[in-house]
Length: 368
Ligand code: CA
Image (cartoon, rainbow, N blue to C red):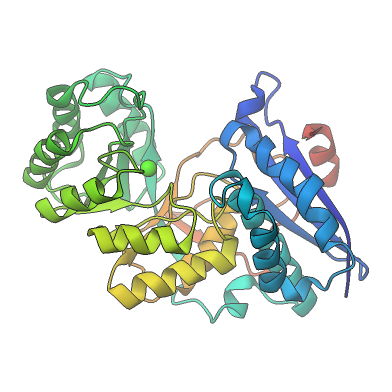
C-alpha cells in the first residue's frame, strides 16, 4: 500500500465564522482506494499546521507505506525540528497520525480501539467543559452550568478563559463563582475548575484552598503553562489534584511536568502526537503513577480519536472532556458522535468509525 495524496484544508462550520474558528482537517489517500481522516489543533484555524502538512510533510509521505506511520512521523518531526518541535508542527503530525490510524483501521476492518489493545469500556461518560466564565457574572455562570446539566454530564468543569496578560485579576470573584456552582449542583456532584493559566503561584494556592473547601475534583492550569516549576510548586502545595499539560507538545516536556510535581496530565491528541503520541504519554504517566486525562475540545474527529484512546486506558480515572454540544459540526458527518443518556458509545466501524457526508463537506470546505 502506498500514500498517493495528502489533502489539508479548513472547514467553515457557519457563514459568520472567522478564519480562526475553522477546523483543520487532513485526508490521506492510498492506492487501495482507502482514505484516512485526521484533524490538527484548531488554533487560529490550524493554518500553520495545514501549511506545514501541504508544503513540507506531504512530499515526504507520497509513495510511502501508511502502515509505517510511526516511523514516517518521527522522520518528519526530526526533519522539521528547527521549525520548533512544539505547537503548529506537532499539531500537523498529530493530524497525520490520526489519519494513518484511521487508514490502518479501514485496511483491517477494525475500530482503532481494537488495534491499540481493546477497550475497558465501550460507553464512556463525559464532563461538560464550559468556557468563558471570566466574562460572566455569578448568575451568568450558574445559568451556563444549568444549561449544560441537561446533557447529563458525569462532571462539570468551569473554565475562565481570561486574558493571559493579566494575573490574579479577580480572585474573590472567581471563588464566588466556584461557590455558586457548588451550591447549584449540590455537595456530591463532581466539579473541576480551569484557571486557564491566569494566577500567580500565591494566587493559585489561595484559589486552590477555596476549591478544596468546596470539594472540587481538580484544579486545572493554575499558572502559566511555561512556568513548569511553578506549576509543580502549586501542585505540591495543594491537596486538590492540580492538572496541566494541554499546552505540552512533546513527551520530554510531559516528563518535565511530571518531574515538577504535577500529578494529572492532559495532553491533547490533536496538539501532540495523535493516537501514537497519546499512547506514549499514557505509558509515561502510568510509569509515574500519574493520572492521564486528555484535553480535547474538537467535537468530531479529535473527539472520536480521543474516545478510542480513552477507552483503552488502564485506570481511566476521569470522564472524557466534551466542550461543544452544538450541532453546528454535525452536517459534514453521517454519524457525528453524540452522547446517549450521558454516555458516548465507541463507534464500531473501521478506523475512527466516522463517515463523512461528502456533499456537505464539499460545501463547508475552505482551501488554504
Ligand atoms: Ca484547560
